[in-house]
Image (cartoon, rainbow, N blue to C red; front, side, top):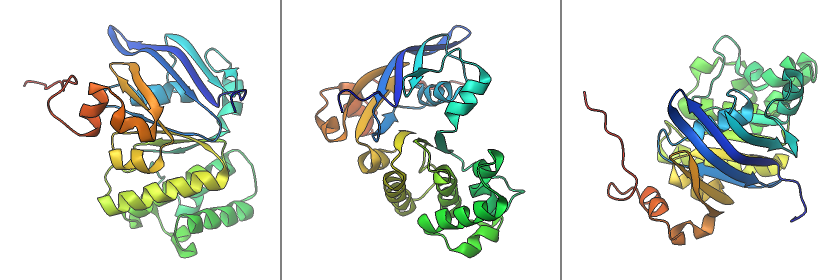
Length: 259
């Protein structure tokens, strides 16, 4: 395993918007088959890190490698080819209201012409079954689903093409504790099923404890701690301790906007 090429490798990642530095110098290594969870408060740089990896934002400097291939500065066609390895569960579900559920699940398969509509629908129904939804749900519209069901459909879409890498963006946002636990369980099972490498961003510690192998904490645009999930309670970091225990007092100061 030591000789394996990292699935995702970030070095010195820096991103600013005007004078505001969002990512200072982010380093992160995610090995094949690993479930890495990035934690941090609002505005810490979690989402910007994810968007840089996906190519939605161009970093000002630094390196992003996927399977050893440098992503910064490559052509659009090359990037598209590499991005076919990715699945994504978006924070808000991001389902298309105009499409039935099965077409939402099969969207990537159809968009990339990976199979015909008949096969795509069969795959979609199977992936819906995998996340605990019956075949008849496939013909419904997203608007007819509860929040928890929409999240399951989003997960089914993320695993539809058996991706190498799956990103989870705040996967339990807006869900009650029981449904959050159900989704966390499904994420663990589905990632294992497809043999994927997982990268999750969240501030939900119950998700961290359920789905992570390793945890990285980002604060003010830097990774200030990285380690195995089972070491997080003995990290020795006041920042980690404050965050995981939800304490108001500590080195992390929340910016309160005055009207």
